[in-house]
Length: 227
Image (tube, rainbow, N blue to C red):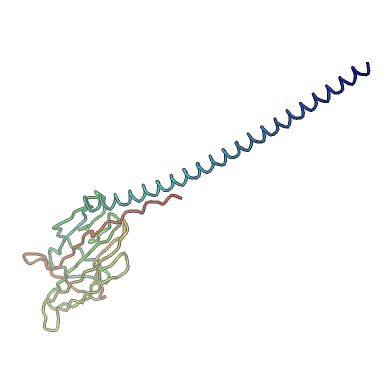
């Protein structure tokens, strides 16, 4: 009986030993699998980050390509904006700050199809698009008149002309050219500066007092950089 109990005790100890070994192996297997899973997740996270960076790089490339496309389109097609007008009849009475109405329009092109451009009614040019513009005016005074005139961007004078038709000159003319950066909606005009009454000549066969301008280069909004 004692021998039988001893054998059972030894068998139980052997079984417990095997179970402990199996459990230890199972724990090692689980730990190994967990470590492999962590490594796989870390590698996947690195791949996702690389893909995110690659996507940002691609988006930036697309934005840059879009900007280049705008420039290429501008060079290939171009937005046409230009006008040329002159004073048709002598303008005998001009007050201080009065905008000169170049009422005889020879050219008035706006391929942007906006409601802006040059207005013969007001004498004001309104920029249809953002861009770099060139403007020119030539003014001839009426006989024995001397006056100052200015080209205005909005309400800021950017160029002054002295047209001296007195002191034996009888008639005199002066010109001014300006290059201006305008945003859509900004205006350009030619205004009389003197506080006293003065006069401009009109057209003798062709325009003697003229105002012209054109779009040299359209400015497109910059493409946003992603990231």
